[in-house]
Length: 597
Image (cartoon, rainbow, N blue to C red; front, top):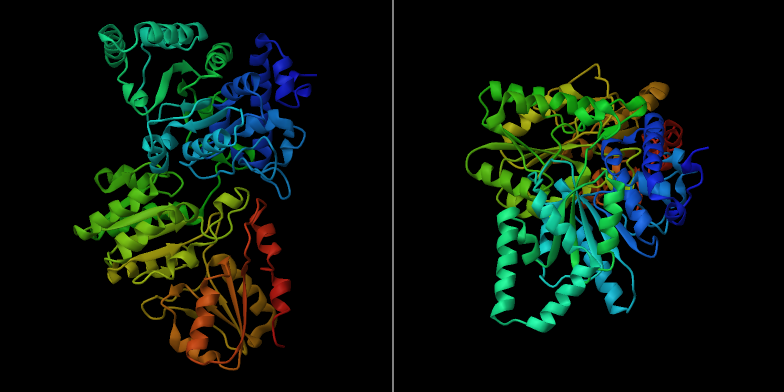
């Protein structure tokens, strides 16, 4: 029987001796590895955060105190220590635990997260609510070094230099974004200044000396020492007490620091150095590969993502003035090979989608053809930039939208079910959904020639090539067969579903590969009069492709029987992609029920 068998909640963590906590950390780490090996999930980020989360549960009083994660893909240890170890094997499974913090799942989860950059704003908001209502609890923000410099977090940091008390920001630095600082003297000073005795002495000295020339001189000396040692006084000029850099895997040391700052009258920024992937040698050496893995700790294959570098390289070889831009997702968007071969044409702007889009607009107006590669769920963060900076100026920016449609186990925060709705209403924007990688390149080359804003969306996972292909220059949509039942399919999954139905009912079903969502192929729509038309799309029905069809039919007074099959007006929880499609009736059996036979 291990320690983890006796630890159900934060209260149980506090019962352990400090000397037992490293053993608990190892048990939690093995628990995470075992479950992720079966279910898939975020491995590296969780392994690197175990000790820090244990220390937080040991010192603070959750759920009274509020722990907010940035992104949340490092929250597995928190879930295990907050009453969910017995159900941890269900994580990312249908009706099981979410892979991210979820306020509807547990009172220990203080804020729903899944995207980067919002935690400092949320934490400040919590503090404002607490202080306004006269409540008393601590707010802890656990943020990674890459997320820390996201635009929204920076806005929160500089919004006011008057920061609240009893707020702790833990900067979990695994060496990706912040320069290393191991100055021993500065750590010594920082450690000393966290002690309650120091804070009492400081208050007494201020009362006794005040702001006379001696007090001002002492402060200048202190500031000079800090500047000389660390160059981190910017944090304190924004209203933070900066402490660091500390070993994020030294539980005993962390508990000492956290205990000293727990009731601080200042907002404390605690800088920890951690090892992403700690405990698994391969993950430590290649944390990006093991950031998000499938079962057996293998990185999932995404057919479309894997083809992107080749598609872009072919364009470069033909002399096209393209560049590739991503927002901290070079691996996920398939740009590694392109970046290696074309370093001067590749830009990773970090977790800053808004900047990525306007940066692309600047390149485009300067004569380039930038390609912005971003997941569907993250691109929506840059809605205003797409509208104002790209579409308004009708610039030749191509958006390669990865993970469009249902995404499976990542759940509600990551579903790519909204991009058709938020893109197709933008003037000058053309939107495409190729059926396979052959058509992807065909559509991409078509977009290059258009020289206007274009979006190309495609799903994750393995997608086999189709047998036949028609050049998009010949026809915006592909037509397969004839019949009084017309199925318009958007994307490879929906097209395969349509073909399954057509295979069974032969000449009674016509299938259209609606690879161009906008503009519509109006000459074909004219032929829908009197027919039974079914739209299949991996998008919310509201404002999506089916809505566009309905609007066009109405405007042109074309009467037909129209059914739109897509996702409804609610967020879609984690499950397999097949389960998610089945939940909204995107299955062969449900489509057959709609046919007129």
